[in-house]
Length: 109
Image (cartoon, rainbow, N blue to C red; front, side, top):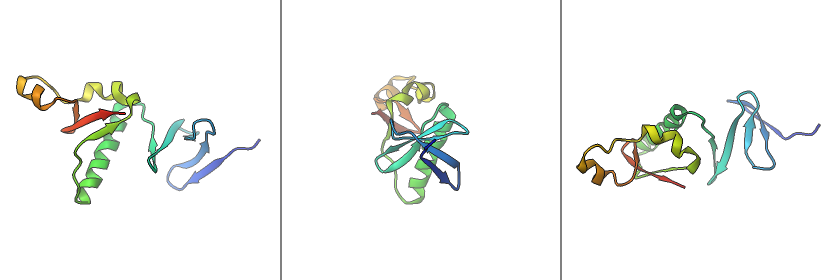
């Protein structure tokens, strides 16, 4: 049987999916997708996704940059919906014209 497998020193063995072009971790069945030159893990729970977003924002901060918006894949919209910031009063409804996460406008692509 021929397979394309890759060994990551941090995560172990990955198998390449020739149809989707993604990498699959056989032990956890998590998928990693290539987007704009970087590999991203496909999340199934909101906490893992929120941690990854927070780590990316923290990394930007320590490099001296500041994020102005978050871009999220459409497949995660329902996953983060309960965690979006509140729009309870009229001022916040104006300020939060777009849904926000960590104080940043959220855009789904």
